[in-house]
Image 1 (cartoon, rainbow, N blue to C red):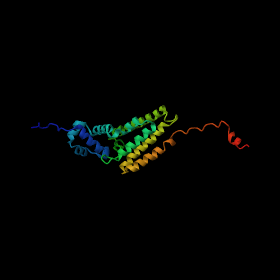
Image 2: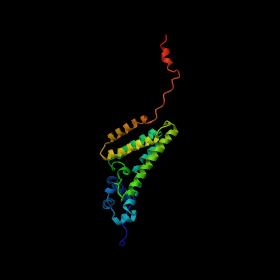
Image 3: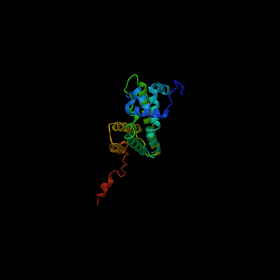
Image 4: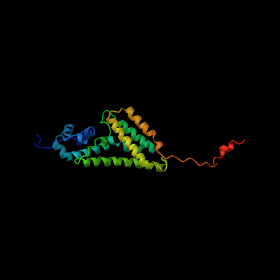
Length: 220
């Protein structure tokens, strides 16, 4: 006979996965402790014993997201042979993942943010820092593009970072609003079509003949 009062046994990773999906679908504020325990299949004492608090459970769920569904950006930035390929891969891989039918839509780090309140300031700051780190990683990859020679000197990598980070976050919103894969890919096509327009314009070569060539050509 099991000892009375003995804590219920469960697989931590399995219940954390369920919590992650609920936070992802409903956001931090929209997932109550009662909702979480129901989804996880555990009682509230077990939740607090294992994770300490709802906030810590959320942080652990976001960490799991970063190790699984949320790692696409890091992979694309690492594997893209050029800066442009890295950005294109980042947008396309996430656009496809954001509308997978077997997962919640969009990006958890973007969509699970709580409404601003004194009770959730720490969670807001936590997610803002993760987004800041993602932007920093993108800018670092773009700066490497200058060093590698596939981006011209003088490229405003901060502006490129802001633009493509905004596109990525916008894709997340579009996915949550029901965009289909074709629409998502069209958005990426438009964003990448702007790539060259965002780079420095190379100066025209000087006219070494002072404009006399054309005039001379008309002389019999």
